[in-house]
Image (cartoon, rainbow, N blue to C red; front, side, top):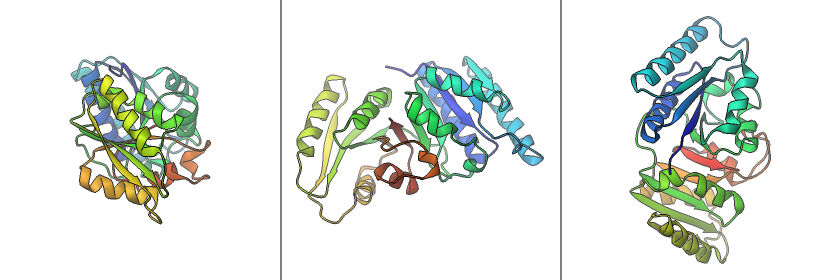
Length: 257
């Protein structure tokens, strides 16, 4: 399996440079068409920021040309055009809710992309620098619809990974371990060898604390998780594990809703 249409949201920050580098790497790996969308609000690209946005645009065009990647770039003046593309892609690259980019990106744009487009979103943490993504993957598994959707959407990563761990958490005794074992068997039929890390009956330990404790021992470079809750994820108006994970984000996270 491969991602054949990849969209990357761009802005004038240094974070966008790293986001673009990863997008170019993924587009090259998958032989994908790369869509660059300048996501900044009107009026924010002035002075030095306008120059930075132009540098990012040139980097996009030069990078895709040098790598012989089919591409399309949408400037910030074509807002609805950028949103239209999000409904016809296999993967979206976006900044984190707590990133510097949020002061530029159009209100509600990333929420709509995550919750309405149907495409998975690869969210990079603030201050992330280029490195492996998808060699060692942890699946945050709760047995729900969104988690399974995220697993299926992450299959191109999972099938290339050197290590895959299914992380399951419950503060009280539950049947999640059995569900995680079934998922591991399901992944095996897709050619993905996965082990299970069982964090059930943990008492007062929170899911996110357990997840990051587990990641320390797994050397993960990607988390796969369902996006739970309602809209306005990026505006932090609802709680839950998804938002807590983003507030403590140190690794790329692939989310689906």
